[in-house]
Image (tube, rainbow, N blue to C red; front, side):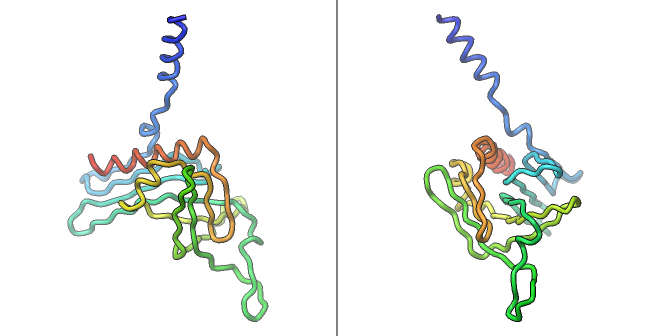
Amino acid sequence: MLYTLVFASLASAASAQDYCKDIKKEITDNNTNFSFESPYSEDTPPLARVARSYSTNPEFQYDNFNIIFSIPCEFGDLLGKDKDGNEVEMEETKIVVEFDDNSRLTDDTIKIVHQSGGDGAYARVGYFPVTPQNLKSFSGHKITKFHLAKVSSDLPADQAQALEQYVKCIADERKK
């Protein structure tokens, strides 16, 4: 019985995934520009991923740390009517992020981008900034659902787990 418990705990520890080693990293030769991205494929992008790029160059410092949310759609879903009744591509704003502890983050000002894929597919995409004020929410809770404008999507549990870990990993990279 004791051997079974030891073996089970070792197997569990061995299967634990190291999300940090999955992060794509790019650093310029002069070690001033850094880019980090959670893994994804252009062919099948996840509903949410993490990206961060920053510069330590004193003449051009920046830090862009975002969770990128995406909801696939048809082009027709992106159309609306203007004041004259003509069909036009809508301008959309607002991202709402819901967490497993029932808390929410909302930003009414974030513009939703409409992206076209090479295969005729479309998606609503929103870049939610990760800030020192909301880092604890993104790195300490799993996202269960998000809304881009008036459209929402549940985030599968495995993606939510990975996303939470990727935020932690990428946040820690800046401390190094």
